[in-house]
Image (cartoon, rainbow, N blue to C red):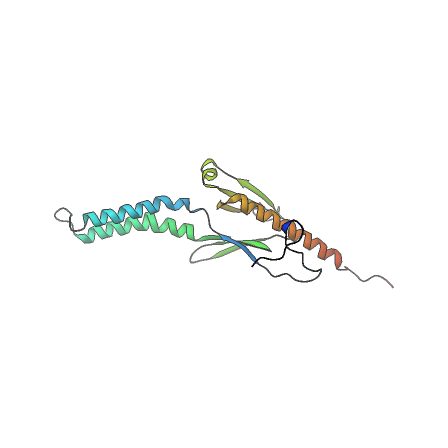
Length: 184
């Protein structure tokens, strides 16, 4: 169900002083093109294991074949997949969050209301796949880099839009709250 829209297709702004719920806009990971070669290796190892099963030279057993296949799968398929899976990004109406790690999870976030700059860097291969690297910098903390973001233009537009909306709402709410009581 979509929200009612105001002028220009944007949702209506909340009333002054009311809190708005934090809504999830997008959850994404780095582009999965890194997993093309591991997928091809997985298929090749499965085919080679099936072909050489009970067809090995004398002196080698099927256990050696399974061990070699398991080592190759671990190093070339499982570890790259785990590295890809361990980093996720969540874009909400209030902040952008980065989560890294499988066992020891680290989170980092930037608030849209504080404001930050968004830079896009795209290499040749990233352009072919529609991906790019976003660098978010607020001028105080270390810049947050979102590597190989799929549909980078769409994510860039959503980030800039959220920063604009949150800063407008923060300035509007700050202006409506008196900082001190006027003298009698």
